[in-house]
Length: 458
Image (cartoon, rainbow, N blue to C red; front, side):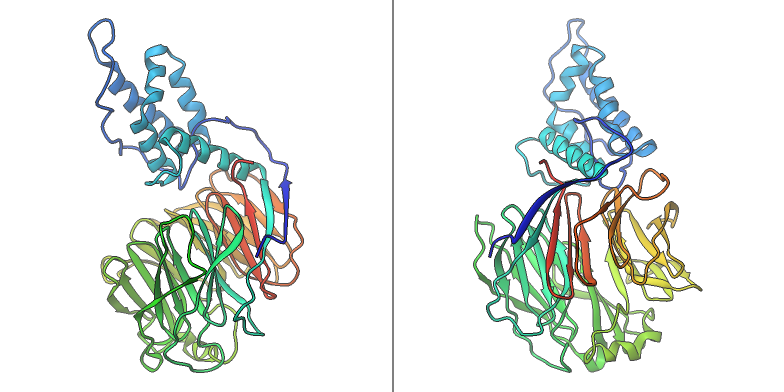
């Protein structure tokens, strides 16, 4: 029930940065400042400079995060606050820090007492990520009700929990603060087709809700108690009952609070199903992305093949999906309208696809990785990740790749030569899944060992 091992790690990095200031979550953009704080001290000459200074400080920080990187916002803000005491007083505006957290970090909810503390925490965590400073743990789970051939299939992170989906259809939740296995979901499966039909295909995890889907096509929802402790067994309810004959295999499932997306393979013209996450109602069914993979989709019920396809959601009401041949970016609101589509003659490593708020990463068959903006396909980073098998994940500022032996970290915002560092902890066997947010990286392998790297304040 407890963490089986824990250690601290640190990797060398190429540059230092400010210790207090702004962090990131996708680079942010200007022009989204929410009015100045309403209460202001009038200066001696009768004017009100604070609203102007507050807007200026916001724009200076955003410009620095866009032109350099997210960590540069701290230095830019420090320069503004050092002009004079009146300008420094703006640093006490909680509204300024809230606006900056939203634009630079993509954070709409704080975890600390004030938005300034939230901003500083995010900056320091991003600094740890840049320099490879972390605590490493392996996580144990309660083996009760475990199948003999239990293996991990997918992972998801929230601010408080790590969710791990297994081949038997169960979900195990770990508390990130204590690194303990605290709860398990045992859903009722209404249909079985082959040994692996219950395997978890994907998880959408938030503070209050857990949504997950199985290869058979069932979609389940579990409410996470807002209290200090979760129940050891969390009840689930069906949102959607799988119809394998009509839909095929649900090979991947992803989403956010607003949208859920299922990627299917097995029936032509049924590649996607989009749900409204608030009403839990389907709003679109269709698409041809996985038509060439129909046969492989059916084989997944009896043998767990490598990734058939993958889908991930951005914060811009769009999704990115791929197979080994194609990558598409499509609209979630407009009935799956395809914005962009790209064929890869050399193939695509399906397991390398991931997204953050605004961009996605993909590694092609030659081992060339690219980070592109989802709204216009602009390439913002290129790197090399060659290996017999590649997994990828990303957060607001970094890409992590596993190439069959080691996990490497690459910086998105600064296209420096080579990777930043490697996570050198010995991971036996092949990785099955990997996930990252702005604080944690988690991975699991074929023997169901679960690995966690925490880059938070040490």
